[in-house]
Amino acid sequence: MSQPPEFAEERRARIVELVNSRGRVKVSELAKQLQVTQPTIRRDIVALETERKLKRTHGGALATRSPAYEVEVEARRFANAAQKEAIAQACLPMLGQNDSIFLDAGTTSLAIAEAIADEANEPGSRFGANLNVLTNSVSVARTFSARGSIHCSVVGGQYRPIADSFVGPLALQAIRQFTVNVAFLGVTGMSGDQFSVADLGEADVKRAVLQQARRIIVPMDHSKLGLTDFVGVFKLADIDIVIVDKSEPYFAKLCDENDVRLILASNSISAARSCATSSR
Image (cartoon, rainbow, N blue to C red; front, top):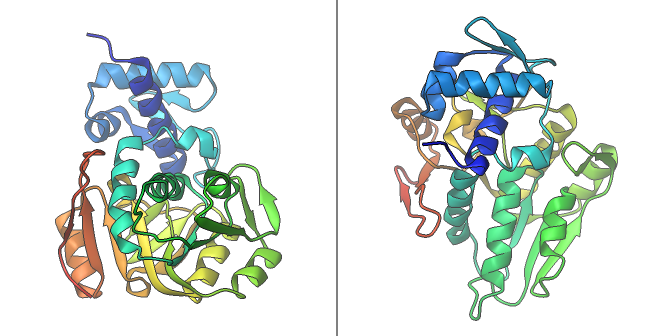
């Protein structure tokens, strides 16, 4: 039975993301990680090579650009979309009435913004009448634009079209004027005890927010575990909570050793459940 087009599109977006992150991948590795057959992966690679998104090799694929190359934010929205939505639902209980939060640029942060906006639109929302959001993401700000109970401030600076975000000295200066209760900081890699991202400017923004937030939460899907991207941004011990769709035993042990709370989000979008494996 053939798979629906939207599933193939999401899977191929994930393949491009993995190839660009690692530089080179094998068909067997992709098949195992994406839980499809090797012939399916080979067909995907052929299609993606035709679109010039990667280079086909014997037994695998190569990135057409450096490993630090970023996939545009709209393309990344298709990768692990269900997991990101479940993670977003697990983030909601982290927020209280009239809270103040920071959301950075990225598709997981965008999923969180959409979940918050939907919840805020419901009668008797847990967020109260005034939720203050600070962001460097245009996409996140646009999500909140029609929600009167959410007050969204956008830091300016140098615009990055690929991430639809602002970075640079002006963005850092603006961030230092605020203090927030909770910051959600996305990453594209987590290896050893270090989180990493693809861009120097985005890394600087995250480090600045680290100093201005009372509680730091890293929401990420499990595919980031074991990956190292271009820029190391902060260490596991620097944060308070990690929210993932599923984990590995070694990572749970790392979180425990660093006094970091690990929350597992259900893969079910409609009924996301969270489980803390250790408390801060």
